[in-house]
Amino acid sequence: MHKLVPLFIFVGSGVGGVMRWMVGGWVQRLSSGAFPIGTLAVNIIGCFLIGLLTVALPGRLLVREEFRIALLVGLLGGFTTFSTFGLETFALLNDGQAWRALLNVAGSVVLGLAAVWLGYRLAEGWLGV
Image (cartoon, rainbow, N blue to C red):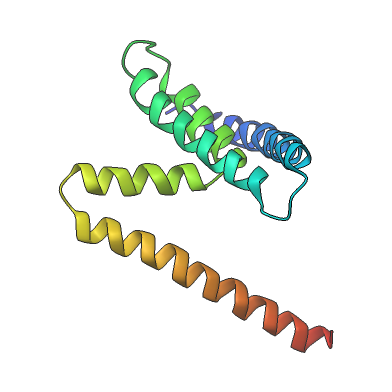
């Protein structure tokens, strides 16, 4: 593995984060609604791209491993970690591990929301808000 991979991931993450802010904000402004459609759009786009690039990069396009990692982990990781969650859940389903896929979905959503709630409440208590 190339020694510059962490740098590639770092740069890709920054670009992906800016893309998330731009695309999510643009979609949200188009809808002008209370539903977080911008975030939903980013998550769906990221899932589509990680599915496409997971097959295309090592297959037809023959992109070097460090650039593949920079795109998938860096750029798409900065754009949305939901894409990685989608790919990992799909891989479990594709391997016939439906129960593990369901556990991943339920655990990520339920425990993730519980962690947000806990962090929020702790911060309220610590800050007296």
